[in-house]
Image 1: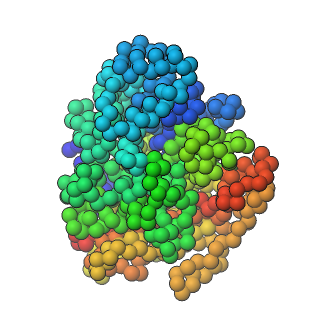
Image 2: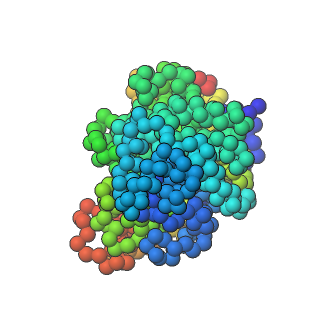
Image 3: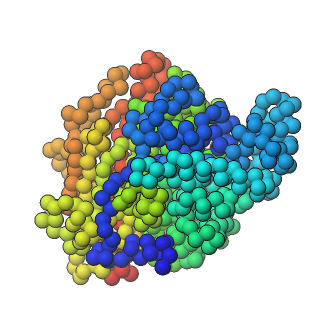
Length: 603
């Protein structure tokens, strides 16, 4: 049985046969760019390589592009330098006059332009035009692309230290149809011997995700390896990320749905370019839906956002759409787990507000970044969210174990804080179970996040054991919520938010709302106190509105108490005045679990 099929069976199988419970929580980032990404290089990051990215993630001090020595406060357990496959490594090779690059048609043209102008402006303008041209034909030879790819993954292999630090292998496929973001991070389970056999499939080969999936199939057939794709930034896709038509305009089919969920079991729900869990237009009763919202336009900044696009862009909405597609076609293409990443283009993976180094080098920690635009022409840097990371429950810190945990979706997203979160579902949990060690009873009697509940007993309702512990170096916890999405018997997609555990002596009102926890933030001092909130929250919760005829999913959202946003730290550090009044100074960080699903077909 293949690894992929084996993991799929585990996800839907009964709790009694679940494998030995993973007891270790690992933190990392699957989406960082170095100077080998053309946009990173073009916007000024000409010096920091994948080597710098891995050293920084492991806790070593690195000199940022600003010249400042920087260190990650708490090292990561794993990292993926996901440089863009399109023209990957080209600009460093151009500067070096690399002979293999110089022998290509593109190399000859760009080296001549560089010799004539002594700067990259003309070349950068052509590069932007080429990646936006759907009819552009690849000029780089397979030899050059393979050589660059092997160089990139050699960095990962040098830093990979199983059991201590995992350097994953991968890249980013950067499709952008009419300026709409369809980007995917490609992640390998494999080492260099397999991953190096084929060069990356880029958007220059095709901007159609179905062609990407075909390449992933080809890779596994050729190498015997394992690979997946992780979509991200649906909030700037202008309705394309989770649309119910193919790129060619055909209605999605069951075969399409099966293929998508096979290759894309996860979704990057939060990162620097905004939070993608929910939107206030789609979830007007959710007071926490408007969090670091980016909803002006698409990644190309070519078309303004329209409300009708939003349902095809946000994680919660996509999870709901998946229920309807499954009802109609038999397969849920959006049965994905949730993760966070930074999408840093500075080579530095930072997601903490008090140690945030932005996206491009003009958003590194300098007095000017609050008034600068990204790359000089994109969005204002103050809009950036200091987000996010990914938590993985796995038995070991190595490529195989982490990839397998991602396949079974036993992962969750954080906007930054390293909150330890457990989430199990069962038909059989009881009050005594809430007093036991949660992982032991969770795996014995239920299923973890990322799984399906099956074999519903007659008259029963799902019960969930949930536990969250604050980041040891961070803020206390405000509340724990269960987000339920369901396909009602009348055919409407609906959602409900349940306050299932919270700090303090607050009371839930008749509308199911919980009063705010309070706010200890001193904006001028960029400080807060843990005089409110809880160090941990846990509960045994049963769905009071369960209808066995309705498809549903459940995921957990845990919020910290209010804390200073990175912008407040900047104001204090640089003694800034006359700051744009629209710049938020307070944030309320959170984590999102991967869901647990229920389907009547599981009866």
